Length: 222
Image (tube, rainbow, N blue to C red):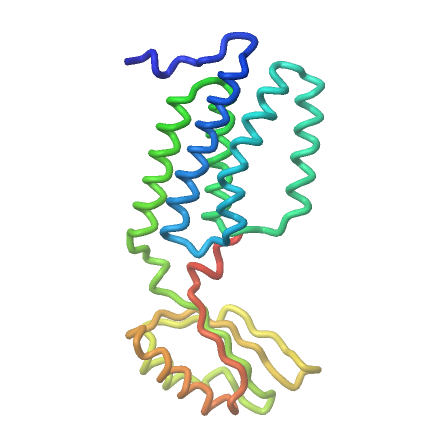
């Protein structure tokens, strides 16, 4: 049984071994992409990247194969990618590390380890994404008010009616000081009453912009 966790590569590798490593790396990427697509609104290009990335990583590691100079050059090239990329969602970055690890395992010849790791990690991601989290009860509320409105207590009665808790986390001026933009962290009593809550708020702020955001999704960038 333990033999399935032995590396298929010993020293130099053949074309067949190389193609087998790429096949398993692509399979691992496909499993990760499938699990992410079921619980996330990931783009088509990102899902394709998850499939291709472990294949690329496996090939790069196989080409380095103990060459220190080549390894340093590859590390320098990969570091440039980070500074040319925008910050992504935590779930997406986790998926990228998942497939990169699978690619490295395939490059080392541990194909069974790569597959088992991918299945376990993808299963854990799916399981945790279905579990209710305490942070999902909270939302970010952004209200724009005119400078003539005393916002400190302007919405207190509405907050008492529709929310369990609220906290003003940020206030800033806008439009040459004629507007204030207020950011609240709130917990709704009844999420189904969100539209009624927003309608009541816009009657107070002069029908200026209001946004109610899922805090768990809006604040997960790394």
